[in-house]
Amino acid sequence: MELKEIVARIGIIRTRANLSARALSLMIGKNASYIHLLESEKTTFEPSLSVLLDIIEACGTTPAEFFSEDINQYKIDKQTLDFLKTLSPYQKEAIMNLYKK
Image 1 (tube, one colour):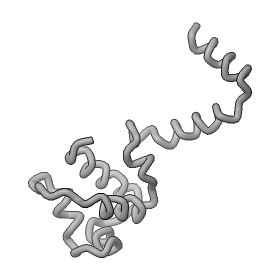
Image 2: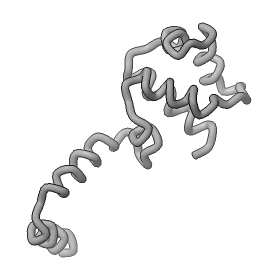
Image 3: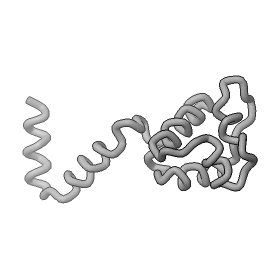
Image 4: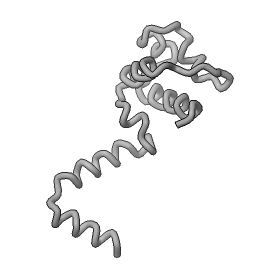
């Protein structure tokens, strides 16, 4: 995942969490303008892994969701997979047979 996508996802999860850039910056113990500067298209600095994990946690999400292939589909994909795990092998095979048709 490239820096641009990481920064875009920070904006997505921050917005979902209803947090201003300033509020998030302060929540993670950074300067009040840290997130604003990070989200700026002109920035060239990268958050450290520990800061990124702090941001993810402060926004009420998980690393799995943040780094998922499609962050907008993560919850429904996870629900679907969790449901499929509860099925018997016979039920899973039946679903796959329907899918193949």
